[in-house]
Amino acid sequence: MIRRTLFKAGAAALVALSLAGAAHAQSASSKAAVDAAKDRGVVGEQADGFVGFVTDTDDAALKAAVAEMNAARAAYYRQLAAQRNVPVEAVGAATATQLLNTKVTAGEYYRTADGAWKRK
Image 1 (cartoon, rainbow, N blue to C red):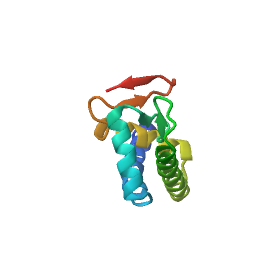
Image 2 (image 1 turned 90 degrees about the vertical axis):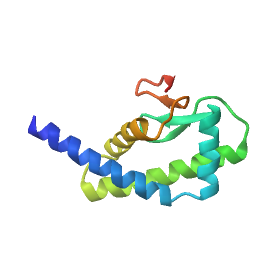
Image 3 (image 1 turned 90 degrees about the horizontal axis):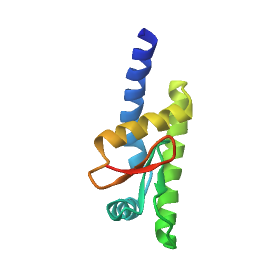
C-alpha cells in the first residue's frame, strides 16, 4: 500500500514536470495547429501520453505539427524517466491521465488504453 501511494505521488510529480517541459519544446504554431485540430475532433490525446489522429487527414502541415509535438513529448518523457529512474511508458501514461483530467475539454477526443476513441 505504501509503495503504491509513493508511486502515485511520484507519478503526479512527474506529470507536473512533464507538462511544463514538453510545452516549451514545440513551436507555438504547431501547438496552435494541434489545438485547433482537437477542437475539430481530428486529433486527441492518447493513453500513452501522445497525440493521435481520431480521423484520417491529408493535411501535411497538421501531420507535421502532431509529429513535432509527439517528438517533443517523447524527448522530454525520456529525459524525465532517466532523471527519476522510472519507465518512459510510466511518464507518458501519468501525463495522459493528468491531461485527461485537466486539459481535455468537453467535446474533445481521447484514446483509452484499449485503443477506443471517446469524446469527453
